[in-house]
Image 1 (cartoon, rainbow, N blue to C red):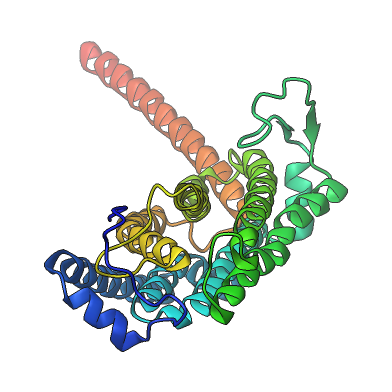
Image 2: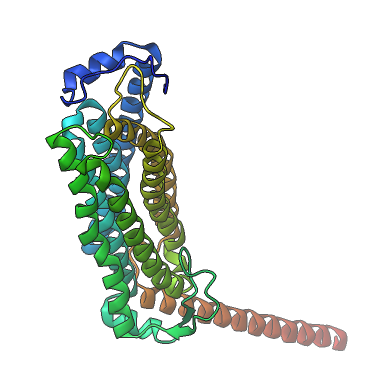
Length: 354
């Protein structure tokens, strides 16, 4: 990174091709090392996901749940692959970034569908949540609003929460695509149309993200205790980490580059949009691999717990029957001890008489 005015400038009116970017990465040892590291980590992430797919196909018997899990866990390799494609081909970065952002938004909705599936359907979900109260004072935007009440999630409230998540799928394509396609039409220069769209699109993206995270946090908080046996907490944490990383890092880098703190990536580019894309994609690739490792550990523990093919009602009934079996065994043991004691007393009396 270099903000020195003497830094060599490229013709930013032309978007570099994949061959140009590869030559620029090869021109310095540190940039080539970063490219190799990003490629290796992406391959490892994909391989670990393939291993997870095989495990889920073998161990999860409920078809819809199997599909939802695979789609949800596919977030990590897809983010890595689209980020790596953006590094190699800047002209494809707009489409690949748009696809990754839309997939992330869909994953939020998939997580809601997974919660409904774990409960056993929408009716079972409403029946289970009707007995649960939760506070609307939830992060990230309402954690300090002490005036918000404690409510019970009914069907209408559940629909509003789903709409709060679904709006993210609608807003994100516009927030990502509009400045990106303007960049494809020409260079992003200070005062240009695409330059002026950076900040508004970032603000719209952040507001939409906060609304979606808040909605899914309220739903998760309501169902967390009921679904604790299904490892929903670590899965929700991983999903929320990815959402925060993609949006917070992007917003922070947009501000830093907009105010001129980072002007060039030598020997790669001095194009502002491309600088943002390269840094963000490198960070995401470095972060997705450890998150995929954690994801594999979580699914492994879930399968070992034996609840991956159960619903909430099945799990609760099984726990109840286990408790009844333990009580019955305890009664049988006590009765056995009682019979044994009586027989010992009788034997002692019989022996003393003789």
